[in-house]
Length: 62
Image (cartoon, rainbow, N blue to C red; front, side, top):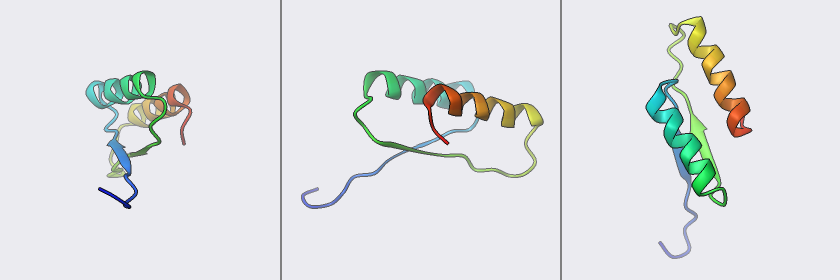
């Protein structure tokens, strides 16, 4: 992809698999500028939002 900027985007669901991938990518490839997203249905359990706050803190993201 010559001349085109590459975006690295990782979806977070609040589950263990997406969290593990996000942490692994941060540990193994800190040089990659990663963007994260969460598809909020506004029907999540309160625990999901708390978990996402912990992920944000762990990864140093907002």
